[in-house]
Length: 205
Image 1 (cartoon, rainbow, N blue to C red):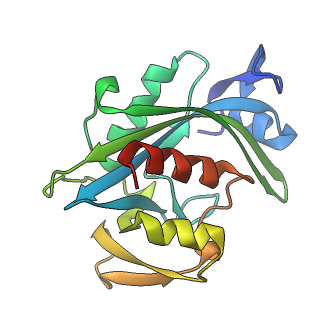
Image 2 (tube, rainbow, N blue to C red):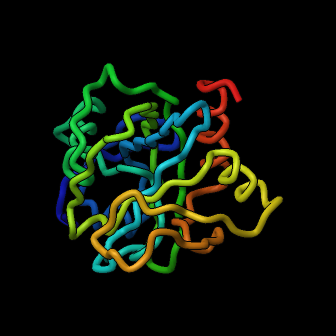
């Protein structure tokens, strides 16, 4: 995976070349990713879905993150990124099922790791109570949900913690878990606000 070839961009999203994923992260080069957020509209109440990253992941093991996401390879288009939804959580979607939020700059800075992304971000809003997930075990440990308004309060820092309800998990020890912002992947400043605001606009709350 670290040797996957990704396209490189400058800060204005102009393509400048390509290199391996490992090289790009090591040097903090801009590249493209695909992000898909699931929103369950349950009796008029929206719930935001998070994946829990597998405990064997090199980066951010066990933390909660975007429902499904991944890198767009140098040989792929943005539309090809939808494969991540099928690969990670086993849900078949078409481009027509998704609502685009646009491209959001997202920077995750860690020691020895700089992830500068042009994130092509999408929302999937659904009402099906029986949506079935099949998790890619080496990538995803579980799918969890929380009321959207609670997530917004958490990121606004008006509350310190929320409860995530387990939708499906490879680890059946618990049905609900209390979390703080420290339990989520630390996406760049403003990324989550843009995502949450876009979801609010589309479901009119």
